[in-house]
Structure formats: structure tokens, C-alpha cells
Image (tube, rainbow, N blue to C red; front, side, top):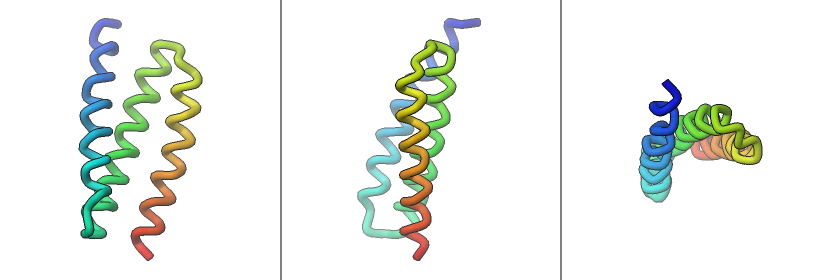
Length: 77
């Protein structure tokens, strides 16, 4: 069972790259979707980090999750 959890890092990376692409958009709706994708990637990284006991990675992802929520709020203004 643990082998499939190791595979979570690949979709997490792909979602992170896709989110980075989206927040470079001039359209606010795409930027907001990009921040939502970043939040999804944060959750995936946290899940993977918990399994691997990578607590520094988890702390980083929690902090980045906060900045992504801030990004959504700023783009909605």
C-alpha cells in the first residue's frame, strides 16, 4: 500500500507547475483558479510529507497554503 503513496509526489508536482502557469495569467479568474490549484498541491504535498515524516515540508506547505488563500482574497478585490 505504501508504494502508491510515494506516487502522490508526481501529481503534486504536476499540479504545482500547472498552478504556477495559471497565476501568470492577466485574467483574474484564471489567477484565482491557479491559487486554488496551488492549494490542492499544498494538500497533496502535506499528505505525501505526512507519510514520509517530512515535517519541514509540511510546515512549508502550511505556510504556502496561507499565502495562496491571501492570493485568492487579493485577486477578488
